Image (cartoon, rainbow, N blue to C red; front, side, top):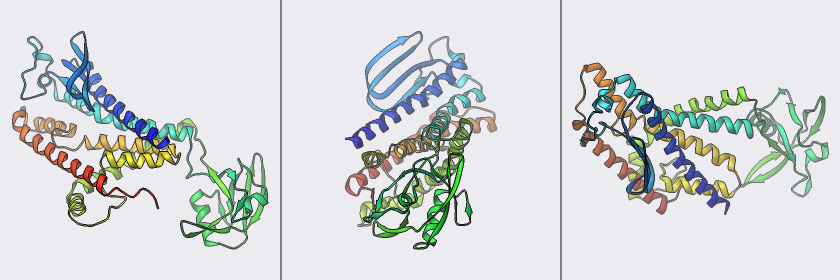
Length: 371
């Protein structure tokens, strides 16, 4: 049940992101006086709409996105109301058009930053401080070393061996290097510090020997300034990673991988391209385990990834519109948008084929989601 709730919440969140994306275009267009004609959720047949002033707002039957319709932006349709020629898309300065286009994908970066910041504020950062969140009473039928030493929730391991203020990763690595040996730990409890000596117990997890003392580490919520810095720092770090992934997934390597998976017996890997079906399955598995922090983090990354895909400099992506504006700026004259239509059709055909192939694979060869 929790897995289903996670999937529903995840995709409702993505629908809201689409609304925010289009809202970015909408607000920027209104700010610069563009003639906005429509702001709709979904595509296909109109389900419901209402007109407020000169703009029609509504919902369409297929909840696969949304759009803002600006007069003069579609080269195949003459949709500029008489008398509004000066408010049409093509009549506005290049810098204003660029801001209107950028406002959509940049909203993804902002939302992702806020998602990551919220996680650091509420949940904390498990990678910084070795703080005890709980103590396991027994390991393998014997009292756990931490329980015997009297550790309790709220304690902080501020030293292990010769390492001051170890991170959880350093803590685990040191215990692994000294498995079966007595190790000296320094514990901070409130204003008091004290030393204890514990010998990690070897426990087999997924068939692998893991040295444990029986503590469950807890994340440490960050103050606002640190949370904002870390959250938007993640946006930068993940953007660099996502750009490389976009190049890999939609480049020769990714296309070759999709073809191999479709036409050979090659097994699926965790790093293979996935459609919304595969992503939804992964979200369901994580949600069913109660790991909602991971679900939220994945939502932030997918939000960021979609925003960066929109910046690919090919029409009909927002990045394609920006590329056209850059060409206009260099040439000093407008680009005939009708000549761009075949490129847009080719890009859409490629994306539709790629996504359909990924859906087929997600159904026939699901990405592994566990050990």
